[in-house]
Image (cartoon, rainbow, N blue to C red; front, side, top):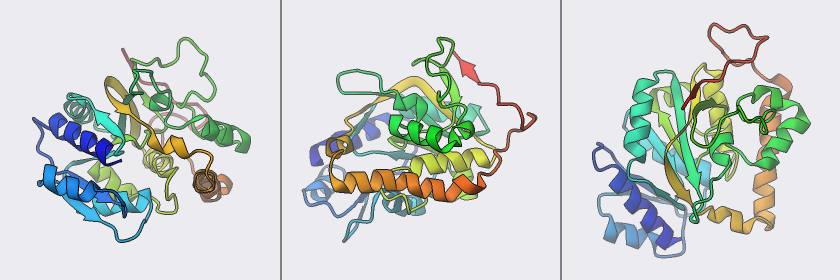
Length: 267
């Protein structure tokens, strides 16, 4: 993971070439040489080192407590950011005042498009929303129209339900309003929960495909371990307990609640 982290941090710094930024890395009690590498290779990076593993949501909240910018970016350590990713997404946020969160196109190292870029969550979460009847609250995530040729394609900018946490640009003022990550989602689901709360507050989430990241998805390699199963499916139980029996109404300005909102698309 140390090598991936080095590539990730290096790419972020290059992407911030024309941006006033601070970069905070939270080390969740790693056992490799990640901290030493950061202090040697990137002395300007702020490092928070945990003495014990706290989980992703808690780690990200530790960084959010220290962040001072108008916008904050949550990024996974197993991603490589394109050189124009920050300037493009920041400009988009500046021009869309109701945007609470923005995600971008994600590719595998081999260049294959990852559908979770656009939908925000994988097929297991999609099945969960359908089985529980919660899918009606995620009308912009392709749950119903995934095979519709007129639906959002890989290169269309669009309003979406959920922004994937691998690259999640947030407006700090909106984050201050809706609150930080729910730390009960230790590994999975915190981005889905935050995206949903952003929409509940009347703001919008967007998929912005005019730039990209490479996502190595290292967490996926442990899919069949007990820890993975416990945290992954446990996140669904937490989400259901939090919202299922008292699903709040999403604020949609100037649109009657009985109608689904129109999709905002941009070629």
